[in-house]
Image 1 (tube, rainbow over the protein chains, first blue to last red):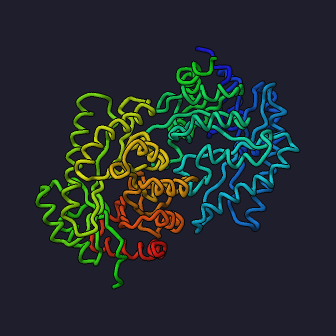
Image 2 (image 1 turned 45 degrees about the vertical axis):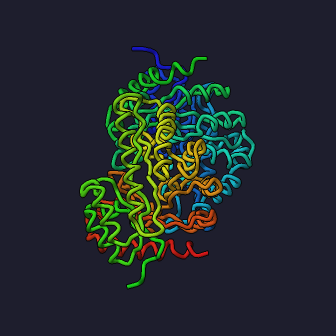
Image 3 (image 1 turned 90 degrees about the horizontal axis):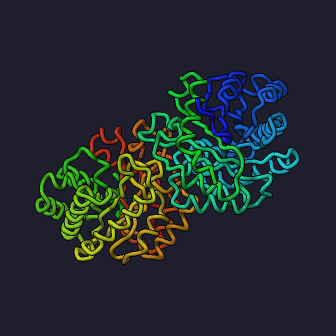
Length: 289
Length: 289
């Protein structure tokens, strides 16, 4: 078996049905050095236990997924969302401290969609900025970077009103780059005619908190959330984006985060192995200077 | 029955299963004044007959749908595509001449996706520009405007590598605005944080060849091509975009083009009536100065 790329990080969503113990075990056993975690499996065992399990695994911690979903108008739902994001910030800080050297305290933020019955996209976007403004002091105090993730525009109405890397950077621009950055995920932005310029801009501003890769392929599945594929299995050319990210000085791990029913139904150890192979073939070469 | 908006045009795709005679008949019978046609039903009766039927209907002709699909690399497929686009240009000119006063000779262009097995998005986009360069003299000679249509980014790989209004305008910028313009379709661009600025830019450059409206709603259907809805049935706020289009001086008709299995399965006369009602409620107010 070939050795996985030392910069590969397995985002736990790729092996969604594995519990935390299994996710850590299969990732480390495959020779992968880093992992990004999700809140639900962490909370299932409790934060302190999760941190201890992570420390025992010897893996680097790359991101915590995810915060956000704060487009609701002022009221109890919005306050509850902000409070929950504060918990997520603490989780990210604790896990990053427990991970191996080179871990990063990054909380990925998915903005949320239009509130039910609303057509006010502009207003929802303003509330995203406001929410980040409310959370930034907490993130700064915890030493956590909030990584605004632009999602593909097909999710703009129901999941994430932040639809381009440029828009994410416009929001981030109001804040300290150590506190508010962006998630650069090939699946969401590969189609953007402006993508390379925006990656360069993100780097110049010191905003690339995490770089994630997975592939795009059509036809999309019935649930368009689940159309993500192993690197190399689709139509994305990983070279230009990866080299652009590297050119900014990005030296962190690179996550693979795949939502895909078929992959989720597979043995997690095999999924990690298959991810490492796809990453090695489609991405690794572009990570070498 | 209320009178349809005088600027409403029914794009024939909205009543896809109606033949040309039926499409013209139900549109005129509903009191709608304009129609956009598709190539297949026109070719089914022959261009001369179609032109004569259109003239008899008394309707204005707004667009011909559609040309494009010219991302293939040099070779027979590309030459065949360009030749077919030349036929489409002639059809558009003939139909515009046959339509009632106020008709417009506009050929909508859908660029096409990545060629099979290709990941070269940049190259495909360059070939779109090249193809338009090859067709522009023919369009100019025929008095036809080629209207580059940016499609939603979810179609970027398999249908249209032109994904934003800004990108369409960048391509159009190389050409005479009378010959190369853009299609502004709410469904495809509503999510774009830059949409209002790009509409303003399009107007400033004299590039808005046609304005089309239909609505966006989730969940998307299994075939994401067919997730278009009557204006007002989804989450798009038609006010800002429509007012932005109007502010550019746009004084043409406004098409409704809906791809939707359920709507296609309905009685076309009822679909036209329902379209007029939706348009009246969601769009008309914004068309008044």
